[in-house]
Image (cartoon, rainbow, N blue to C red; front, side):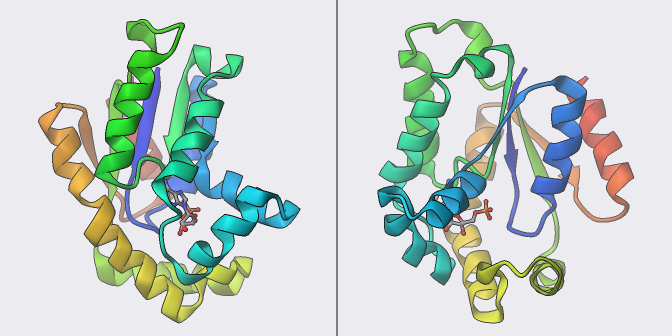
Length: 191
Ligand code: AMP
């Protein structure tokens, strides 16, 4: 099974990704994690990405599309994969479609079957992200950056809701409430 996790920053994608991964033994591909690692290592990609990430802006499409292109060639994704934090723009989603069709090993098994959309009201997101800033010390969780990431989400990423709805892939999940309940709701749409 191949899925996309979609939702605003602070919706709980990372937390739920851990449960889903255990249940279905799929490759977990988080562009945010890959980029943070690159920044830590001071690689050319990390150096390029850092200023965008610090501002809460999106890293240019070609960078993240390149990450996914490489990652989907790797063997562990053949038995199923979960994209967490990608795509974040319509352009990235179109690129993903093209990429999947173009894979040398392409067959129906590599296509996306579900887009799990975690819905959380905007007001709650700000509170959650500020809580995470205090707990995890993520540099992009400070007040100003948090507001910008939410703004960027509504402007550039939320159009993907209609995009995947039109493709009949969208699975809406209420992202408020107990973590275990949300996990149950996700597993029941995936099973
Ligand atoms: P995340 O951990 O998914 O919230 O990502 C952290 C940051 O990495 C984002 O605020 C962006 O700057 C960058 N990033 C992660 N995924 C993408 C993506 N698909 N497109 C552009 N930027 C991304």
